[in-house]
Amino acid sequence: MPTDPVVPARSAAEVLAELRGLREADAPTRGGRTFAYVYDAGIEGLDELAAAAYTAFATVNGLDPTVFPSVARLENDVVGAVAALLGAPGAQGTFTSGGTESILLAVKTARDHARAERGVTAPELVLPSTAHAAFHKAAHYLGLEPVVVPVDPVTFRADAGAIAGAVTDRTALVVASAPSYAHGVIDPVAEIAAAAAGRGVLCHVDACIGGWLLPHLRRAGRKVEPFDLSVPGVTSLSVDLHKYGYADKGASVVLYRDAGLRRHQYFAHAGWPGYPVVNPTVQGTKSGGLLAQAWAVLRYVGEDGYTALAGRVAEASDRLLAGLRAVPGVRVLGDPAAGLVSFTVLDGADQPDLSLLLHLADELRILGWYLQPQLSFDGLPPNLHLTLTPATVGQVDALVEDLGTALGSARALPPVTADPALVGFAARLDPAALGPDEIAAVLAFAGLDGDGGLPSRTAPVLALLDAMPGPLKERLLAEFVGSVFRV
Ligand SMILES: *Cc1c(COP(=O)(O)O)cnc(C)c1O
Image (cartoon, rainbow, N blue to C red; front, side, top):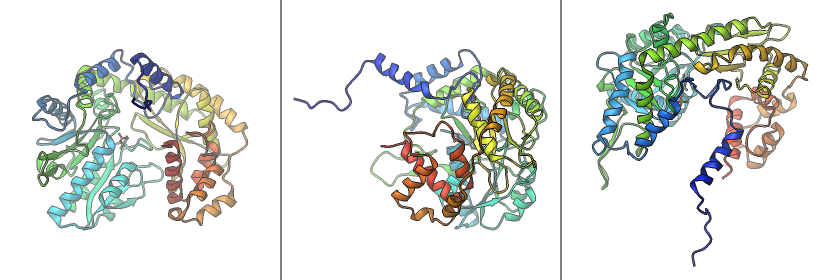
């Protein structure tokens, strides 16, 4: 007799019903009220097309384009479209699973290039403080030393002169963002790339979020300064098709100036008794589905479609900026290039008011809006971040109105403050040395010992985190997420 199954089989209908039920507590991914993580083109039928294209290629293994030549055709088409828009003659690239993977690969390429061409054995990665965390992840995984250069505290743009000053003989790669995720401002790409080129160093433009929006904004008649591989000195670029390309998640491209550079990205191995391995990306086996859905979405929307969508994003941005600037006590950060906006709120002395900001985020959440809290960092103010998509155009006015209401409620709440005694205590802790009991105690104190996820009001937790030193913050966040994934 077989033993009772641990996972009993269920009907397809039951399985799907259960999955759909799980979505109920999630933030909505369509409809324009979730201002981070999701990209809604608002085009009827687009999700269905992406799903059908995925399904058609779900069982194909992208590991081997000689067995599945369709994969090579699709990837050449997708990377070709990206190169046509953002490349330079001779540019070559790779389809990846997302911005993080594109960045990991660009950093690996730069590391191996610096070793091979310049004999650099202890490589450094020079980046503005606003560069995406994925670069720190890449440096951590790949053994580079990050050299972080502060940005201009007023414009939030990278300081090209300071970056030039940070380049050494060990620099493998210099980074600029177009735009940065945190504040949505475009770094002075041409100056940064020229400084890198002057030292014989590679320069990556992180256009993960802007790469598919900016050229179409330009086509829609907006002024966009050059930021891609056509800029002298730019040697690689990343662009996420799962952002303003509106493909489903798992779609990005990393592009290089030429084949000689891209060669450093590939991993080949013949020293085992299995099949000869060539992996252009981090993954081995990978579904052809993600590539196929990105290919389908790009074709379906087309150049004119993306231009129209970019126009709608710009309209949402214009309306939001006008609305925000009219609210007393709200300050928009920097000069957002379109798409991304972040703002802070000020106290009576015109200083960023963390407590009010966090209460505001919670109050807006109650009203059905998700804005993304970003904590203070190195003199840069805490803020709320919004990613605007075409679906948000019709929501922006209502959001601004609710923002006024929510700000009123937030002002009426008792301020959240991190207990100074706890903050002082925390500052003296060695995050690496904390044992399970101490971690549990701190998490419980912060209100993070609940049953998976944040408490419904996040302000007290975030205020405490904001006051903690970076390494302790990182340890606690990792422990918290570890507690969410309980098994
Ligand atoms: C989204 C983003 C990334 C990281 O991409 P993922 O797709 O989340 O892995 C990197 N840089 C910028 C500017 C981004 O917006």
